[in-house]
Image (cartoon, rainbow, N blue to C red; front, side, top):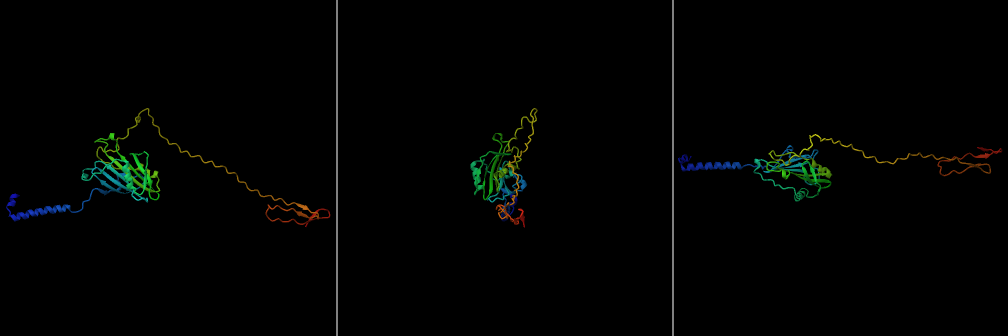
Length: 308
């Protein structure tokens, strides 16, 4: 190549070099043209959800996924009908080997669940409401969890739940039982009670996992009962007791109704005056109605009374 260029005139060599340089620069400029989309946040369909709310709702509205070089996070937005400001969301973080294609992405910071961090999250999710943290120890299918409950705007019931799924420290190693799952649930519903919203923390399901060997944040499965399948260890069915009806309240007997007796009218008595005229006695004022006077009677010569 050097020998072929040496045979050419100086000006021609200079022109060839400049042409090659301009071509290279043009190619570099073309590679920079256009907009490159970030792999940070994407919208995924509902069937790609890493966790699902309990059967019966609330329903999934949208899912925003963010991938890091050490984790995957999904904000699973849920249906909201409450008056309290904010969006219901089930936020899931899976820490584990994402893949070599995401090595250029930033890392997702990890922090264990602490009271100070939960207090910050409560202020961020419910800036105008006050939720009270429950002191109870509760546990669902994935282990212990915590929650706070309070009232939002108008008559809204609001719950914020948190949980970390991680195998015990003595069971973790570099080759097995690795990985962590963190869950947050923000849920508000009009007129909902604490028990109704708390059912969502018991009923949600983790639906995703890393396929890498050794990733198992759930730990070893529980051991089988020693007597299972052995002789001399009978197992009886648990028959639910029939529900007993509460005794009916004693109702005092109602006395039989007595019909009011018709007043008896005593016929007026008569007395004979000195002149022989019979005058009826006065009738008591308790008896209503019209009293018809008796006919006028007079004594005859034989002493008998004759009425006309």
